[in-house]
Length: 180
Image 1 (cartoon, rainbow, N blue to C red):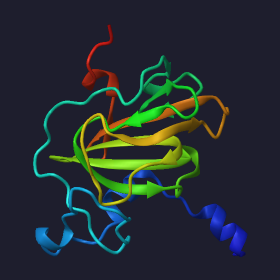
Image 2 (tube, rainbow, N blue to C red):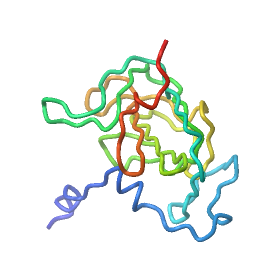
Image 3 (tube, rainbow, N blue to C red):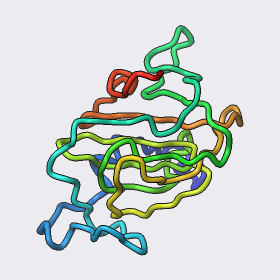
Image 4 (cartoon, rainbow, N blue to C red):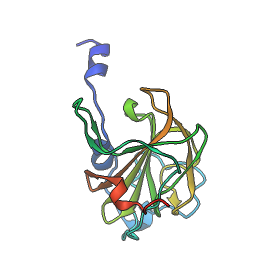
């Protein structure tokens, strides 16, 4: 197999990032990040998630839902929702947590941020244009973590947002406050 064929066959998805990209925690003292981490933690250092989830998510951006959660007649599956937002709009952490991942290892998500919230809850923010947090940094609900970019498929400015309970994606709309 050539290098190009091996590269084409290699596939990473969010489940890989959630379950396989970090080492085991040695002790909570070694893995816990201070409240304001000035630089990214190396990928070889585990990130401790909060022990308990506060039980509340907020909308990460204001804007129309461009594409909902679930399976479509075309056969495509959206494991989150896509929210329209002008390029450069502040993306807020949907709940308190710790940044577990920042990167571009999954081309379909563009620049992706994963935040662990405790009790197995994780939120994902895709299509970011610029990042304002680093791996291992603690964040609070409403804190700006990135600026919105565009879908790599349509070029339309938006945020791809997911909520997961463990590895299972859930419909974010059911966990977000109703809009007025």
